[in-house]
Image (tube, rainbow, N blue to C red; front, side, top):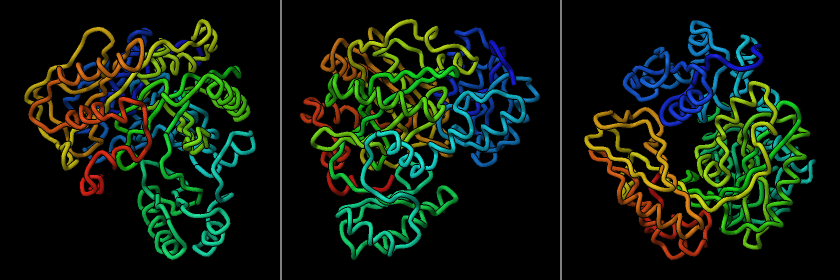
Length: 458
């Protein structure tokens, strides 16, 4: 296993996160290797990397999820480490194990820690043991509908069934009463099996209008853990985040400090290393409940970078090189102003239908406190095979009001022609009185849109 400074890193991903990792490596003086599918032959990450190898056809299963092809590319190019980005193989403990066995550093947690955090019920049980608040629910995987009915009767309706593996809203069903539970249990199992190759589901109390709050964690390989300021991710559609911000309008210094102390203890006990995110639901009384752990960098990491001045991707790489967190952070972490992120997706803002195709015109906003993370350019083609994320538009201001005004200005100056994008939807979100006032919860989009549009499948 390589030790010390990396000379070359392979990025096992595509799109904006691949470009983001390449940028971090360039600043650290590290050479990069891009892998790409046939559909991504002309993608920006292929152009910006020092080397690039095609690893298969457009279908993810035969390219970005093809572990032997990625490991072969890493061995051919003689890399020291692999950065998985997010999605694809980023939380695959088996892939992390293969990297380790192959003598390649996986830039992320150890395989055994990914296994702990990747199975939601195991992670919930661990957090309960560590004193982190969790929602009332099953102690493990439910075996049948009768077991679920008995537990739901004890907890009280509504409850939610969740896939034990995976995320993104798949394998989830909200149950309002006992009569609905058997059928929804079967649906959740079937969807979980199709999406994650395991039908295992568990049950927990359902909060009707929660905020979604998450904490960014950094941990080195010497036992030091730092919990960075929280992010508010309540603006979602079908469990997919649309707008994120930091800090949360609902948090205070006391609660922030309590959660940081609890999570430092939990992460240190778990032997967690590298970057990760711990996600919570907040009820109407302001109480937080742990829901899951993401053992990777998050899409929304730029808002934390803006308010802390910490380059999280560079920190990931430096931690994997064996550096100490104290040397990376260089002092106490402070919250500086407020940041927002809008995920600009290639989709119709009215129907939410995907909008693949050629970009005929492209102009990015700039100026004070504006950042755009993207992989697209004029005349590039958005393929229909992958996630619809085109760009992440991030703004920073001295306070929330300035960050919102800056975001409105940046949205107005962001030109993407040839395809539909979610920019009009983001303008509508930011103009809503509840958003302006910070009155947020995961049902925001459903209330803002007409019931028909809110129900259109993603």
